[in-house]
Image (cartoon, rainbow, N blue to C red; front, side, top):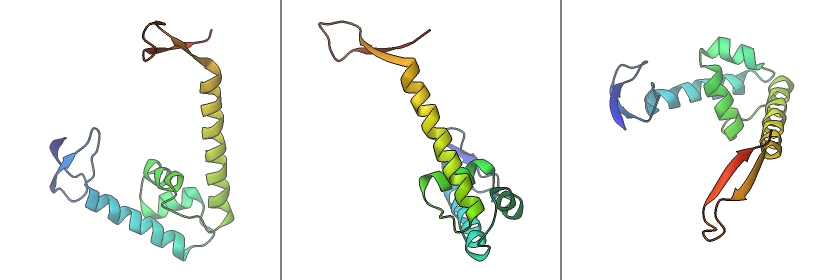
Length: 116
């Protein structure tokens, strides 16, 4: 962790790698998105980004973590499509990777090899 300045409030804070917004500002942004969803039942993902000014990455993360709950069909459809895409990626990764023991004497050592 290193000390940096928040992009939004300009206050110093200790940041993890690539973190540019302090936790306080991040929670304020989360609250703004949650309030918007609560007051606009059938909001779309794009509308949510445009109206709150919060990044697609942040909103997507909160939706996938289950911190935000979709009320309307458009947002529910987006979440379901995203989860299916993630599931397909994970299955594709499992199908393209095989786990093999590097050394039979040391079973704790494992390497990953991509199938060609």
